[in-house]
Image (cartoon, rainbow, N blue to C red; front, side, top):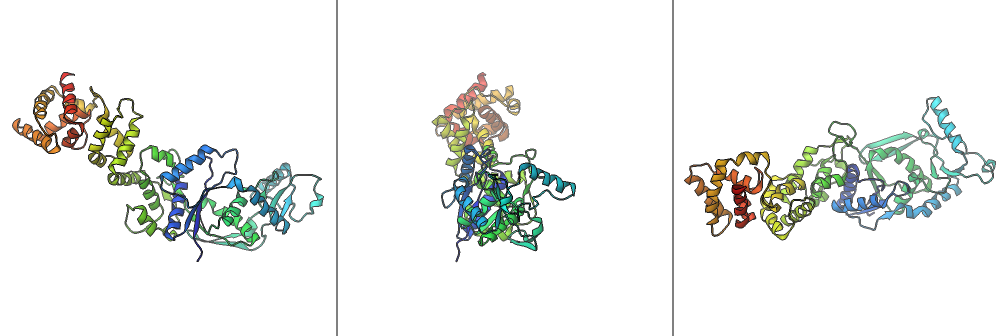
Length: 468
């Protein structure tokens, strides 16, 4: 039985777009589901636009998403000799030909076609012409001979049966006049040599598939199975753009999304399987298959992604979250990143992660643990710290100072006893305390918050409010 082999083949010319990330995920899951192999190829033949920085962005993004290839990545630019070899073989077999058209002639062809209301394309000028008619030493491109009659059919795994009349295909260039292979040609040679059995990519490549199929058939190679994924649109149904929000993996990472959440959301964006919303990687591999992918474009739902991220955040390991928060603290000028702060964050993390939706929110909500007195207070905290509340905090501080074992239970008992003694609701006591020690009106449970700060720091922060 043939081993299923899929590939992700991005061009390193920019950021890793969310649509490409989904294609990588689908290829990875499809291969894993069928016990196959997932490969990575960097299509860097566009020398002017391809950059090492963009290559690193792809590698980092895929690693962050937990998508690891089963073999070393292939760089398309390293295989140009092989691409040329196949092009010349087609030339030798009479299945391709030399085209000596000048740029001016090609421009005139396009203008003539436009004038007749036809799509601009090559007219086959050198297809059946004797090369001896060409000027001596003139540069030439190599074009494949496209079939002129009948139609081509692709049984697409997502789109179903798709047909194109061969008359709509022109004799595309496979080798430029400078000897470099074109993208359409290089892709086919690489997929064949890498033994790719399934090509799963965006449906913006559907037209390319019919052009590339010409090379497979001319070489007598077996075509892989194709699956063309519908594109991701914005919430309004328009093409996803900057005005809708984040578009790249890097942006989502910087905004504090977990890779598990992003992958979970992308999987459900265009693929359906029952009502299950939160799926682990193991469950994804078990359940995913290409027949569950719909044909219609998906709409990016940022609110849904935020919800899924909050779910994954609550499930995440506390130490991992603490490490991330401490890294984010390094970008905050007023937050200490010493071991005391780390210990406080770790102690309060079980409560902090219940309230945050992103890692950015998590770090912001935990920042008070690393700030020095006097704290800055937000407006709501300021309103809570009335003269009466400050007087009350002075009395409460004495009771807290007398607590021998500063545990959540002991703190809770002290606060309740104080509220009862002064005939106050617990919230009338807890909220001013929260404002005084955090600078805000929100935090995890006040007993856990005070314990994380420790007795000395709690009393120091209450004292700063009294004497500020």
